[in-house]
Image (tube, rainbow, N blue to C red; front, side, top):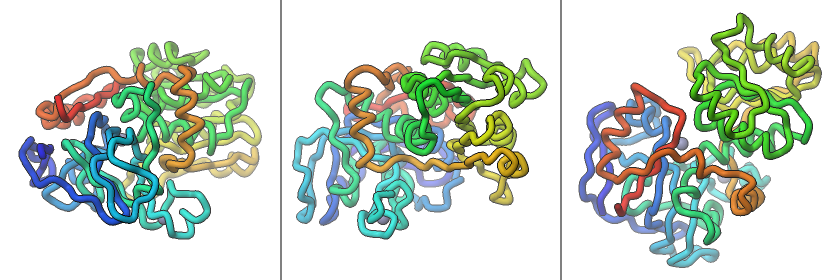
Length: 347
Ligand SMILES: [Zn+2]
Ligand SMILES: [Zn+2]
């Protein structure tokens, strides 16, 4: 099969022929019809992820059809249209047994812990735990865009954040995951305040349902501006960017007993980020993390996508072929961009 391969971190990836994957006993091989390009792929290529072994094939936001099935898989057969969460679970550890596959103790991530989906085929383990059926009405490109940023935003807003109609929701950072969160919160009936430093990002946030947009460069104190716009603070606030500044602004922009959900990753040299804990105590705030979404949680989200209430397809701004991935991957470092690119390996 053809695949995007890199031999060394940060050095140009290339498209070449490699051996076709075989399914594990409990796994499947999926023919990749569409796979999203994500900033995590750029981080992996740069060597920021210690789990990646070289040579490597990146790619983790995929949808396609089942090509081959391992002997012990019971729920899937060749030809099934499927997608997967970017965190694939083992199905048997205590977290999986409790239904929390998104924090599985033996999780695998295609494109990180093993070869991913910038290829014509990808092997996925524990298929009965991890595969999600894609309704016939959904295009593969739309389905591929769900697995990482959209499902992550859905879990952050709906499951961890417990959004309710009429609440004020602040979203700090309107990149892919932030814009997804704006769309999901607005569709849930919340009044969304979108915060970003880019006019273009705020324009998109307004298009996707933000009631109010706040340009963080135009105010001295973002949290104070959010409290002002929301009559005392947001009920629910997300740091969708992941920086010490946006994390603190999100916590400080909450009202009493508000909920902060940390969605953006917070890499730091010490591994820790300062959080305004005094405010968390005084106002009885809830501080929550959110990490992907388990396969069994997909059906309600898929139903909202199928019925057109949620439109992840609007977030996809370009579609490219496998040959264009190496240059697109390199370009991500310079310009993260607000839109999503989908790769079609058979083009
Ligand atoms: Zn991703
Ligand atoms: Zn597990």
